[in-house]
Amino acid sequence: MTEKRSSTKLIHEGKYVAEVTVELIYTDEGWSPYLSLDDAQKLDDVREALRGEDLKSAGKLSRVFVLTPVAS
Image 1: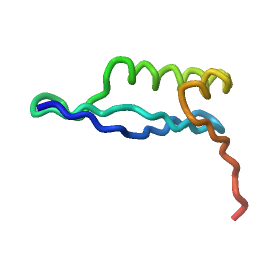
Image 2: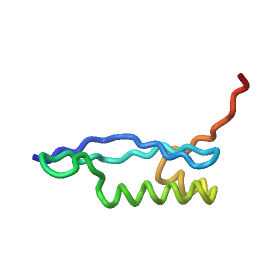
Image 3: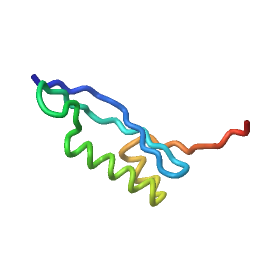
Image 4: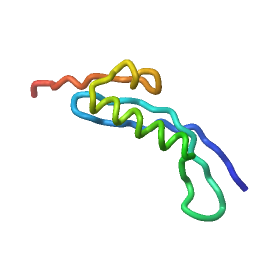
């Protein structure tokens, strides 16, 4: 039996955080749950775009946020 469920992964790089929607694949065997190759590549692409501060590219694949420090 194979089941797919939508999930949100957060990628944190520097002062940015991206919210990336992926599908987790659940099976009765192996290392379940796992990502498809396409979703794993999407996470890598978003991480690389954030590292290079290419927010336009990261924004095409995810929702991007800027972290702001809060005085305590």
